[in-house]
Image (cartoon, rainbow, N blue to C red):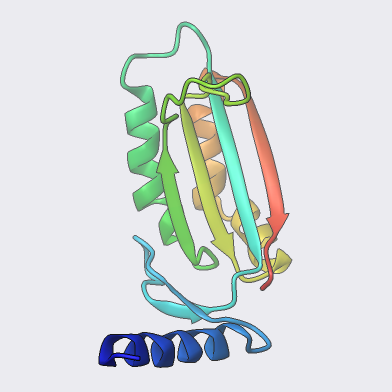
Length: 143
C-alpha cells in the first residue's frame, strides 16, 4: 500500500465517521443575512413557476434576482437557490416552467414563518398576476 492509498483510506474513514453521526451538519451559504450558519437540513421547499403566455419578457430573470436578494434574506431561510430549466431532452423531464426555487429550512416552523413573512407575501403579490400556475413540493430531508 503506497502513501497515497494510506492517506486516501484515512480521509475516507474520517468522512464516513463524520457522515455516520446522528445528524450531519452543513455549512449553507445564503445570499441573505444567514450566510454560513451551521444547520441540520430538514425541509426542502421547491417551487416551480409556470408563466402566462403574455408575461413580460425578462420576467423570469427579474424574479430570480428578487428571489436571491429579497427572499434569501428572510431570517428562517438557510439556503436559497433559483434557476430555470436546464433543457434536458427526456420524456420524464419538465422543461415548461420558467423559474424555480429550492430553499432549505431547519424545520416546519421555519418554513411556516417564511410563508407568512411580509417579504414573501410582497413577492407573491408582485408576481402572482403573471403565473399561469405553480407547483410546490415540500420535502423532509433529515439525514
